[in-house]
Image (cartoon, rainbow, N blue to C red):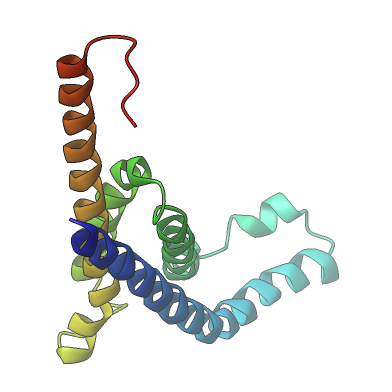
Length: 159
């Protein structure tokens, strides 16, 4: 059981590390592509004395979708780092990883249908499997502890 717990923690660690590294790299490359159009709208608001709310009407919000997703992946990676010791945090992380994987599969502009796109899903898969293992072991231990306390009686300590 200890080996299985270590495997779950390692899956969470490496999955979180890969997810943060991948999302951070992709975010840094997309930041420049996002900066130029937004700077143009900012210059339009400042240079022509148009109100910022009027300039924001012309902003194409589609350019913020992918960087927002990548920031969300980095936050998910940090949550996975936190969930290595706390198994109940996996109840939050597992559905978020499934949603991120579904979004990744459906986003044709972010990924191309080749082997590289499947490798980008590997961190999400590692986090999901590691979190599932830790969560299952948590509930197994909890049920065993309850059985032991019922068999020894209430108020009796077992060392």
